[in-house]
Amino acid sequence: MGRRIGIEDIGYYADKITVYEKILVRRDSTGSPIYKTGVKEYRVKGLFAQKIQLYFVDGKAKEVLCDPVPLKQLYKRIRHVYDFNKVLIARRNTPNQPLLITGKGMSKFLKLG
Image (cartoon, rainbow, N blue to C red; front, side, top):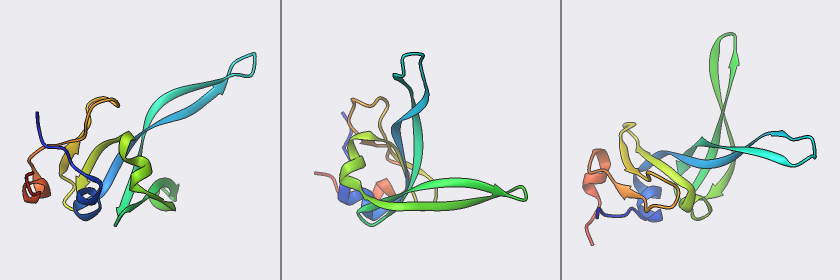
């Protein structure tokens, strides 16, 4: 089994994370919501993360950051963790598995133990 990455390590080494989220698709005829599972991107700033929303103006993508959310709230739903060089440093294959380091990029500098 590989080494798990902690919240403090994500706050120090990570630039961007992707998070599993339920997305409301529509409501059925009885009014019950129908969700699909998707992934959203967040920009990491210390022990907080801000959701990235993209919109286009004259064919160019603009980035808007939402209100900061503590990493502690997002930790169990994090799918991928990227460092400042856009290298994948940790991944969770399915939502119920641990978040493990990949051994690439900045994850080489994580202390063992």
